[in-house]
Length: 294
Image (tube, rainbow, N blue to C red; front, side, top):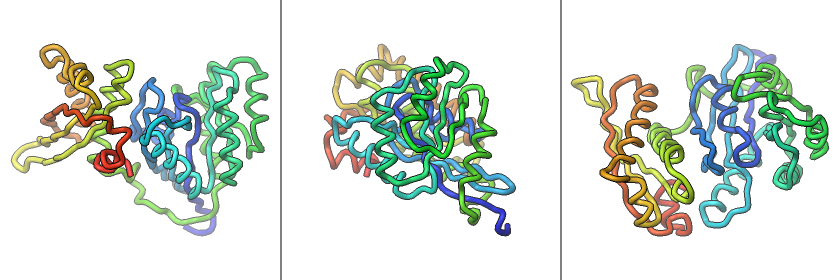
């Protein structure tokens, strides 16, 4: 590849709901992170891999930075800080449709503490408000530069990729060129189910949900994969909401998730879902570990 090939790890950082996961999916041209209008949708570090002829960028999507109110929230913040300790560059993603707020200032200060180079990415650039807002964001830190983008339309993303690659060191190709994520298949399938719960439910229910995929079994005799998964909630009342009247809500969740799974696997899916109560699991160390939040 020679000395001209560049590669590195790039953390995507920002407040909840600024469009980090949408940005990652758009950059990769493929869905690797679930998207929702609910805050704190992303709970884990999610790596997405962009391979070009002259560079490989390993993006690390992170949970939105927030003040934690339970052990799950503390885990999520450890994920963010862990990502910052091991990357070559950070993208601070802000919402251009709103003026800078206290949350943006808090994150900018965290980035200074992390001592990582930062590129400011103003998302929702097609809805950018007063020019003072942009200057306000730029005043939050000593950034390498500013790129205005729209994750929804793709505007400005070519410029963003060029700019960030310029700041990566010469390095190897870490992953095969056809690989877009290093997440295990069970994790991705579980996230598809959780996304549909986020989409279809309201209030406290989405944040109280965890999903465990217990089985993924392709059938040799036909183009079909059996997938068995459990949706965990914290209260009996939440279980009733997820199941719905006559099981209708659970059927809707399953149908929507199955469509995503079949597109990913390129074969038919037989999805079986169960709903169980794991009382106050977000506050219990053992429950968090058992559900993959370590």
